[in-house]
Image 1 (cartoon, rainbow, N blue to C red):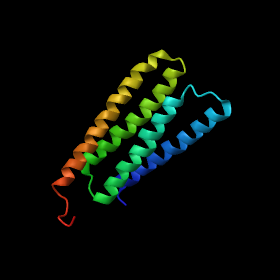
Image 2: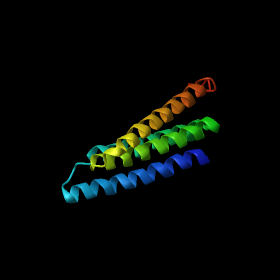
Image 3: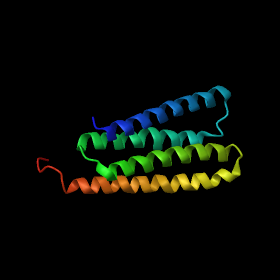
Image 4: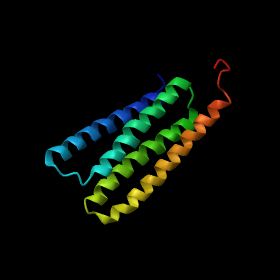
Length: 127
């Protein structure tokens, strides 16, 4: 497995673990105020990063664009989730972090779309 794929899977697994602990704490305390942050951490952090890592593992591609995708997507998922938790917890100045994290995550997805599109030109004719 490439270092790029392993990097995606490492951050995804850490986000998945954090999301599980986060969810368990919400369940134990019966306070689901931060559920949107929990959902974003799981979907952007665990699911999206793992799917991107799978793409890079299966395609054998990545390069500079793949690393840009990794940096943006990882940073966006973490910044958005943490800022959203702080914002929902009452720290209103963190709305800026939510917006920045959202923009970074969208740029990460655009980098991923570019990686997928670039792979079309290099795909094997077998299927």
